[in-house]
Every structure is written in structure tokens, then in C-alpha cells.
Amino acid sequence: MSTRERIAEAARRIVVEEGSAAVSMRRVGKSVGLSQMATYRHYPSRDALLAAVADACFAELAEGWGGHPWSGDDDGALERLLTEHLDFALGQPHLYVFLFTENRTGARAFPHDFRSGASPTLTPVADALTAGVRRGVFVPHDVWEVALSIAAQLHGLVEMYHGGRIGLAESEFRALCSRAVERILDGVRR
Image 1: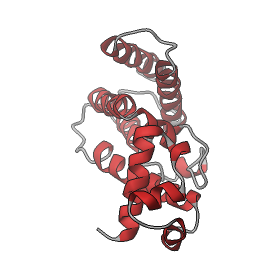
Image 2: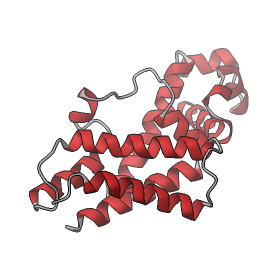
Image 3: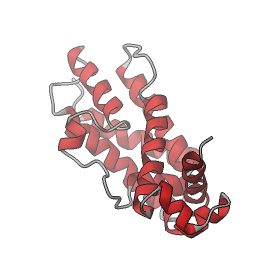
């Protein structure tokens, strides 16, 4: 592993364990045996380092979330994506917040970045919705707006759950999220 990769991995560990606010160039450098100034030779700024961490994490998510073959079962594909989303959100809450809710330099934004297919996590949802429209399961609609509505619903529920505002066991919370997504899909289902 190169020094650059070791630095990014150290930053990622800090984000996973404590959140992005805990990442400093000094702390990351120290954890890999470098001075703060040596760390800057590999990443010109903290933002650049965090952007590299985000890019690597989104690449991994894209491989997992978008890497499944389509079965022709649009509801099943959407349910699988929901499960993977919640597994990630509940299993790595600090990393989830960093990737999906914190303001980051270079973060993708709706509508342009998403509609161009640049979102590794929202594109599979839009693809499943598009497949459903083609097969007549869903009425024709703006798949990106519906995908965004699903994502916003999930992000909001996850944030409330992480913040202790939803007092359900994890299994009940997952069921709540599934029902919420179903209600959105009911609005576009034939």
C-alpha cells in the first residue's frame, strides 16, 4: 500500500469511528508515522483528503449497490437496495453521515449530477424505477425525482433514528423504512 493510500485509509478509519470532524492532517499523519507537513505532500488540504475518502467509499458502494444483475423483479431490486442502504447507514453511522448529509466540497448535487448518472448510490434506484416503467409496473414518471424522494425519505428517517428520535428496535425501524418507500412507490405503481 502506498503512503497516499495509507493516509486515506487512516482518515477513513477516523471518519468511521468518530466522524469527519475528528479528521485533521496532523492526526492522520501521526497515525501513519508522518509529520503534518509530510501529509500535505500527498494531499494539499484536509478537504482534498476527505474528498479522496468519499470517492473511494462511493466507489465501493457503487460496486455493491449497482453491481447486482437485474432479475426483472423491480420491487425485489428496490427492496435489496433498501436493505443495503440500511445495512450501511446503521452499520457505519459516522461514515454514512459524512457521505450523505454533510456539506462536502465536490459533492454531487441534484439535478445535474444525478441525472447524468454520476451518483453511484442513486443511479441503481433510478435504474430499477426505469426498468419498472419499461415493463409497465410503474406509470411513466420522472424516475430521478422519485429516486430522490426515496433517498430523502430514507436519509431523514435514518437521521432521526441516529438522533434518538425514533424509538424502535432496529428490525422495526427497517420495517418502517420499507413501508415509507412502499408508500412512495404506490404513487407511481400501475
